[in-house]
Length: 318
Image 1 (cartoon, rainbow, N blue to C red):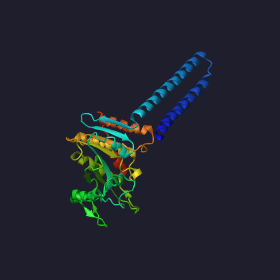
Image 2: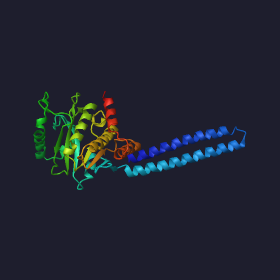
Image 3: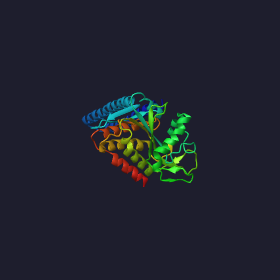
Image 4: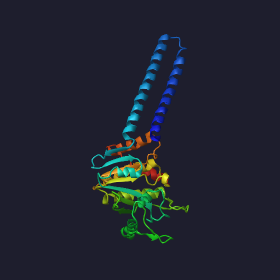
């Protein structure tokens, strides 16, 4: 309901903008009455009336367009990447709802962020995080197997042990997990954060530079694991989850990075990239439409923006 309200607020703002412009035209008409030449006054009246009518038509057409686009693209959008047999899109809703939309249709994998210890006990996992939601779906036996799977898969990548004797892994390390008996999707756990200095259970911190590095490693490894999958990635590393990046930055980065690496790699990264957007992540209709426009730009043959976006994120790191 809130999303519907925002579209009407946006249209309401446009109406007030039109009324403000009409008031300027009305003021100009009032001033024109002091002109003694009636012919000039008639010409000015005609021009003012034409401008007013033109403004009305413009705002009506664009408002209808906003409503049409909102109703069409408010939940999902997808576009084929030019010259490649892949697509890029977004789905709006809770993360698990988005994942379930692809149930039974194709092979699905999801990416979730995790601490660089790959520790999954309560002191290292936020109770509201996606990884905690995932773990809660596992049986006790599967939960025990998860620890051994992580150890066996990543043991050779350990760089050191912390003061709690927990193994530490490089940022961008990816652990891949097969579907559990109750889930239809594979899981990729991406190391992208450190324990928070606040000494709060389940809270972690990460810098912009570390997050960008982790994302880069993910895209470099993607074709080794997900070439035949629909890959669903939430907006990880954002401020709402304790990270330093905005929702818009992460969404645009994921889209541009996927398009960029798909172009330069002979092997495709995934059959489809789906950026999962929580419906409160973007507060305005214009914001979600900007993500759609970004997809259109990357999937077309226009200017590619990956380097620009990455550089802008790097500059803010400095």
